[in-house]
Amino acid sequence: MVPNNHLAHELDGTGPLLVAVHGITENRSFWNLVHLQQHFRVLSVDLRGHGDSPRTGPYGIDESVEDIHRLIESLGEDQPPFIVGHSLGGVIATAYAACYPTRGVVNVDQSLQVGPLPAEIAAAVRGEGFADFTRTVFASLYGELDPALVADIERRRVLDQEVFSGFWTPLLDWDADTLAAWSQRTTSLPPDVPYLSLHGTDPGEHYAGWLTDRIPGAVAEQTPTRTHYPHLAQPEWFVSRVHQFFS
Image (cartoon, rainbow, N blue to C red):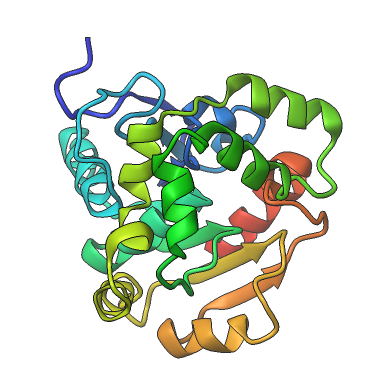
């Protein structure tokens, strides 16, 4: 049994500690094709409400940061981790580095420039149309991803309305000023933390400038394959780029 609010996890490989954080509706097994353990001691986690971790609210980014930090402390690590996050995991990775010592961050295809969502989207997320809405959103993000990988993702994804809406609370419920203040805090990283933002979908022509205004020294790059899942589309390229960036 996993202790209450203790994240299910796997630890594999040798080298410096790297925490791998999956996206919403996914779990730690989504990193299985990405062999980061070639260069790192990889701690892959199931976020609260995902995979084998407890389904115990509240579900949110700040709660996930604390869950991950408690897990790292329980392992007795004496060096700060690297942290890599995909989608929602990219926000969590960024928020972690704003709160705790971190050796570097890679954010995989997650824009940090957000605002409150329209009321009709909030109604879809919290209403009877939740499953159809989320499937439509995810379908728009596959891009050039191999259809076999798309089918595997859809087979293994778990749509849980309570968990999903919990993690989306800032976008669904907060006003613009509250969300902006939270975003500012979340992106307030120490100046010596390397930060790489890899984009398989288009974050907008002004995003790189916005990001470096928030995180000076941040690097924003387009990935070779246009998809929300560039780490799955080209895992060997992804592992090489992460290793190069953190070296």
